[in-house]
Length: 178
Image (cartoon, helix red, strand yellow):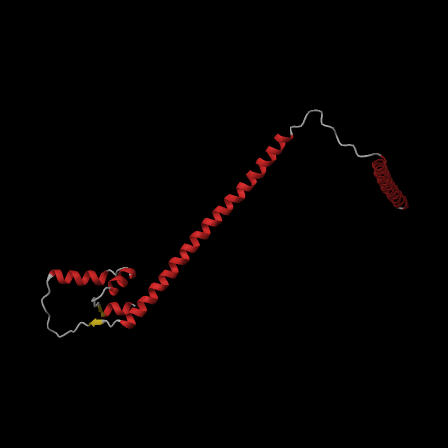
């Protein structure tokens, strides 16, 4: 039994030595790499300080006019893109201002209609059920049904109400709608 425990302890000792040895080698390699990187950085810094800056030479003639034209065209193309965006936003602004003007006009029309209703007296026709039915012609019934089924545009109503000598008769069911 002691022999087995001895072999196990020996194996564990050997494994521990191998792990320590591998860790020490990795640490040594890391330190070598850091030292080499530090020395190369220091050498490059010293070389840069000693040598003057030399611009690379171009072996062929440079056409500066062509280069400036190409740069100018690139600038114009970039500006044209922003100009298109400005134009699009300008159109959107015009549409929104027109819509606001139309809404303001509708509000003004509604105010004028309210003032007109206050100023001009309206005659209300009330249906009186007297128990006795009168004969109606086909034409009269179709006119009254057509007037009650469809309502005209508010602008048209305002124009007809503003005509001189025009007294408008509004049925009772139309007043309830307003």
